[in-house]
Image 1 (cartoon, rainbow, N blue to C red):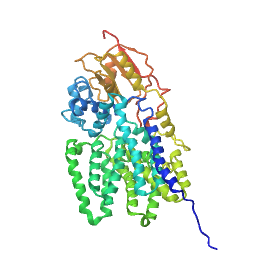
Image 2: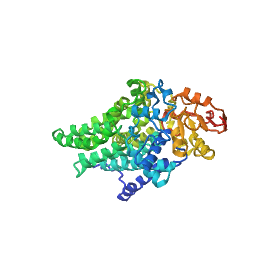
Image 3: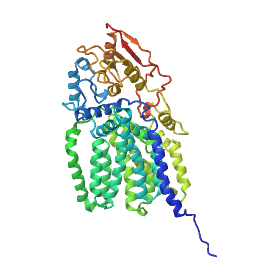
Image 4: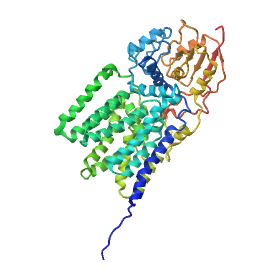
Length: 548
């Protein structure tokens, strides 16, 4: 008796329905998490620096660090010379000269610490939507939304798997800290988008499609214009793969590299990239350990990467050439960042590696789909474990100690509650509370003395702002005395003796504003999420008494 094995295959109509419904579901989830309550919290320091520079680009045609009233610097306190601080807190020119010489900006005040592409993006939003939080943030969050949809499309087309494409997009959109960073008016979501676009263009180039090399070079050039830090390790991995895959055609690959280098060179010269090394915190080993922890915990669990490498090696000869190369490249990007970021970045913040989340989602989705085969339920179970629990990240904890700020739960991902609170909650925002009070009570000419989060005041208010990490004009007697005082006692990375001296010169009356004294406003980094806003003391905000 002949036994015939059968399997249940969905009819064509059902398959077509899922092909159209799945991207719509993903788009809806992404839109909900990315756009809901986007303006509930005001811009914090890093976002506001970008937004102020974009505003000045609209006003002056280029992003100026100094507009004759307020000064922006790189906010790198580790690079501050505390021995000379007293020489530059009284006269604006002394401070401007110091920071120009240090390399924060060019002698004509043009900003060079980040490429201007992100300021162009923000300027478009501010021009179209007004000088608002929405105008500053929305253009960036839209690029994060596009990254999710394009990742789905890329995996669906290149790996011919609806399951894999769905898993990749869902793993990305349920990455809590990627979502929080993608809701920022910063380069993070744009870099994630360009990572996906670079992989798409690279696949097109390597598959021999017409115009593929041009598309790849153009994508890499545009990426450089918004983030000239992360693009280098990714390009190194892609070009290495291209050379290894076709060693006999190395001249063609080299020609693309030379053309791209020639296109980037004038901008690299303008930004003075050869002299851009910032003062770094701790040793390389310490930074590498922290980056490894962040990558393992919030981007690509080491167990998943190792399992993907094992499966890739086992099935290497049976996999289509482009598929195995793309997976190898995606793994290589995460590994390259582990070396690159602690070597060049000033600190080991998650923000420097979170842009690799789309590549990590691709690797995890590929592993789950290919390992499960026709057992779709197992792939979905594995995805649920990755999304809901930290179990795949825990094995590395025995080798890499957790940072002081880490307070994870061994059973479920604690950052999911952080995501829910940030997106759907209404936690008190100290920046919004302070700025709205000052908007109601300060005249436009009143000078405000503040030790940190000075850039948000520059964006939302017309007032002259003294202070910040640079302690700009804190003790300047040439103009009127500060009318208002705003001090965050929780902040340790400022020149406190300077602020205390100036504050002691006048008599201040507290205004009674109930704003939590926490280090940052809407900082998306996990190290900033441990602060209890409800238990924090009130920050100091006071008005100078007339006659002082």
